[in-house]
Each structure stands twice: as C-alpha cells, then as structure tokens.
Length: 426
Image (cartoon, rainbow, N blue to C red; front, top):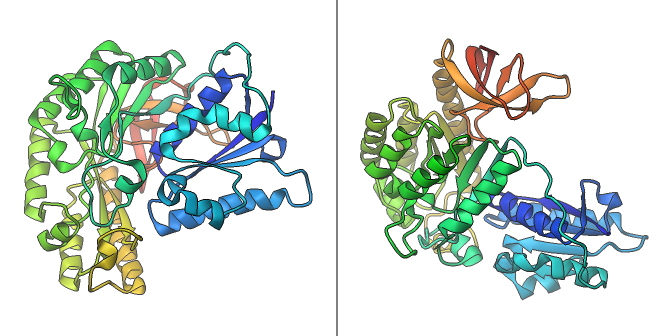
C-alpha cells in the first residue's frame, strides 16, 4: 500500500486532527511514514491562527514542493486551518498544493488520498491501530462563539459545538486500551462543554464520568475560560485523585478597557478573586494562563499593570504573545495600533518576568513528592516524564532515575531549573 507522510503545524487541536486522519488512513490499509522521501503522498495540516503561523504553513508547503523539483511529483494535500480560512483563494495563491481539505472535511481524508493517487478505495481489512504514547490529547469540542476581536478561530472552525459524550468516552477508552495513561481534554473553550447538548451535561459532569469510568487514567483539563471555572467543576476536580489539580485559564489581559476592546470581560481584581476561589477549593492546584501584549490602545500604564499582575505570582506558568493584526478581525481596524518594535519589546520584558516568577514558584517544589508519568528517555539515556503539575509541551519535564514509559511513579524532587525538575523515584 502507498505510504503517507504527515507534517502537523500549530496547536494541540491540530495534532488531534492529524492523529484522527492518520488512524482513518491506517484502518483503510495505508502505511504512515516519518520520512518524506519514502512517501507516496504528503499531507500538511496547517495553522492559520495568526500571520506568523500562516507564513510557517506556506513555508512548509513550499519546502516539500521544492524537494520534488526535477522528480516525479508527490501529491501534496493541504489540510486544516489555512484551507478553512482562505478557501478557494488559496488554490490560486498556492498552486503547489494539489488538494485543499478544510477542517470540516477532514473525515473524508481517505477518499482525498485515493483521488490524489488515482486509485480505488482500498478493500483491505482494518488493521489494529498502533499503541498510543503515554499521554494523548482528546478534543471535546470544536469551534467558538466568543468572537474575541483579535481572533480568527470562529471564521476557521465555525460555531462552537460540543462532541457527544458517547463519542468522547469511546475515544478515551480507545486511547486507554492503546496504552495512554494521561488524557488531556482540549477544545477552544472546554469550560462550556455541553451547553449545546440536550440534558444537564456540563464540563463538571463530563470530567466526573470520565474519571469514574477510567480510574487508571489521569485526566487534565486545558483551555478553560474564566467563566467556565464553576464551583461544581472545582468540586469534581477535588473529588477525583485521577484528575490533575491543574487549570489553564487564558486571561489575555487584565485592564478592563483593553479586555472590553478585545470583546472579553474581567479585570485584575476579578481575576485575583477567581484565583482565590480556585485555591480555596484546590489548595495544591497549578495554574497557567496566556497574556497578550501590544493590543491596539495598550498604553505604558496598561503594560505596567500587566507586569505588576504577573509579578504577584498567581500563576505558575504564563504564556506571552505579541498581538498580531489579522485580516477580517475587528481589532485589525482599531485605532492606536501599537508599533511592532514596541510590541516585541513588551513581549520580551513580560516573558523574562514570567520566567523569573515561574522559576521561583517551581523551585518551591524541591523536597515535595510528585506523581510523575514516565514518557521515555533522551538520546543520552536520561529518563524524563511529567508531574501532574506539568502540562505536555509547555511546562517543562521531570528528569528521574528509573522507570519505564507509561509508569506513574512517586518522585521526590531534588532540584529544579526554570520549568524542569529533577528527582528520585521512591
């Protein structure tokens, strides 16, 4: 059977989409390869959230196309956000891509690959899917109804829609059966899951059901807007030892007039009260947030307030982004656009402060015992994994002295370096 190469760009949600497409292709009899040169068809799952991501996606397509110059051309399929955002205009602007597959048509990837290769749909029986890594993302929703003035997601992914519980449970059970020991629940806004479904289902109910039905798997909830942090959700998290005491709460900013211009709500004081309420319910919780600098109209005073807020150390981890004016968004048309050099300067200053605050908070874990999921070993043989206080790909890792991939071990933390920790398995 033909071999298929994937290149995935962008966020964790794209990684899930690529995994689902790859599973469909495997079950149709295709082989997946990590080597572009061995492949018969290449698929690029693109990101187009901001201009820099779009440029990276275009570069990836051009790089693959350039390798085929002077040789038999490998069909190149462009999937994901860029295909959804730009549609038919992309076909003319990027002729190197042979097929465009928007996000809402990715379920048809087998038919698209067959068409690209000029072959009939395979009749092979579905093989077993390969083992899952020690952790895996699971999407519980897609789309967004918030229409933040800087964001293109509603244009790309459409209206918010929750995936049905039966679908989520089946996916979670499948990942667990394939060996996943941690499942990370993601979506554009995980805190409002269920609002568009019949019955009284909500995120708290979903977490409670998953934790009960899969007690050997630990669950982590990401991307929960402030309004989604309900007392009921916190109570469910406190009740189940296999739910990581961890929340990712994107705030974006802390001054009311900037948040209002973003078509969001809140203030520094409101966010302080939110964190206080969360810590009352879950004293050992780890918190992450995302902040944006350089939004139109942001003054030096606004930026100073942002610095002061981060310096308080309410959040263990802070992701920092410079505002990017995106075509088709309201924010791109706002007056008082901040010059690019000032945006980058502010982003660098805030990142440096956030790193310093995080390093201090992480160092306070020295001497504590953490439950660490072993992920594997580096090239030099050094074992590493992640504690419940470390989300995948963003919060560093924990180095340890023994264990095998998939083990969850109690580890005494002996040292830290910025986000990373080091310890001894007990």
